[in-house]
Image 1: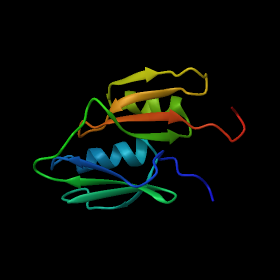
Image 2 (image 1 turned 45 degrees about the horizontal axis):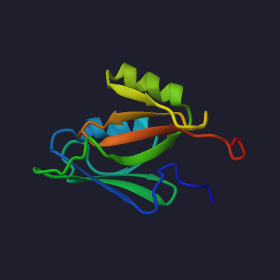
Image 3 (image 1 turned 45 degrees about the vertical axis):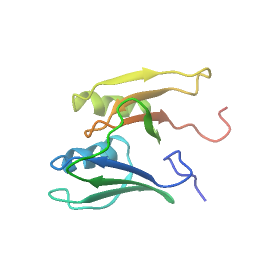
Length: 128
């Protein structure tokens, strides 16, 4: 089985205010390249995205709990440069992050709701 690009041991649960479902769908489906499972982009109470068996679920609520400091999710993307290009085209601010290893390249970004997310370069197995 192919591993999930959402790096988590269980489903990820986030919250967002009403009125930004379309922006969230663009961010997670187009930028993070996750599969969009459902939710009406016009008036959903929940949006759901998936990679393999792990889902990223966003509850739309009038009083959301948003964490803009701590990283809420790490999502691997096939091409970090293509992802950065999409962020720049969408005029979304991001910060390039590096770890000890060269293969730990990623960007830190706030999703449209303000949740801190890291998008990490996906590497073929055996690259490390």
